[in-house]
Image (cartoon, rainbow, N blue to C red; front, side, top):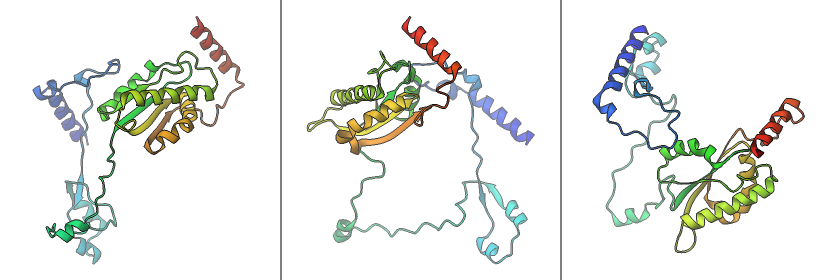
Length: 251
């Protein structure tokens, strides 16, 4: 194991110092506070194994477990145990009847229109709080559109129902302005990523959006949202901290 670690360390160091690695274009993000020097970038080594022993001999009882362990080599990952072999597809036919009989099914995950991510901040927060989340999601979905909600920045202590209504109006206006279409908004998917109290606000907004965008709902993801309430509502330390936050916010 020590030799493997030393080999990985040597390869990773050589990779970080290579000309090719130094010329990589960095991701264009707004927040670079979490970036680290190239000399300390993590390098992953993917180690895969595949069995080389005869399945027929194994079924006949001619190979024991020790021999199986010796029969593994670094290669592609082996198939799952008990998984059936993929059926061989017949060669494509150019016959007109055969072509007409083929099902016209859209590829899995395909959709038309823009994918809009709505990012909702939490209690005493603001849209800028969600910038890091937005930056990371945009690396995976560079063509998507992002709405960092500002509808409730001025008063995060208002009624949840009222804030949900504000968010719903903001989402509808954003889709109308940024996803134009000939026969209404050209929206493909609508996803929500929320933090803390923002998860409750987004839940309150969903009933106001489902009639118009219900068939476009795709992802609803919340972080640290108190969907079942919070555990210590009568804790004096919690109340003191909340009072302090409100004072600082108002100053």
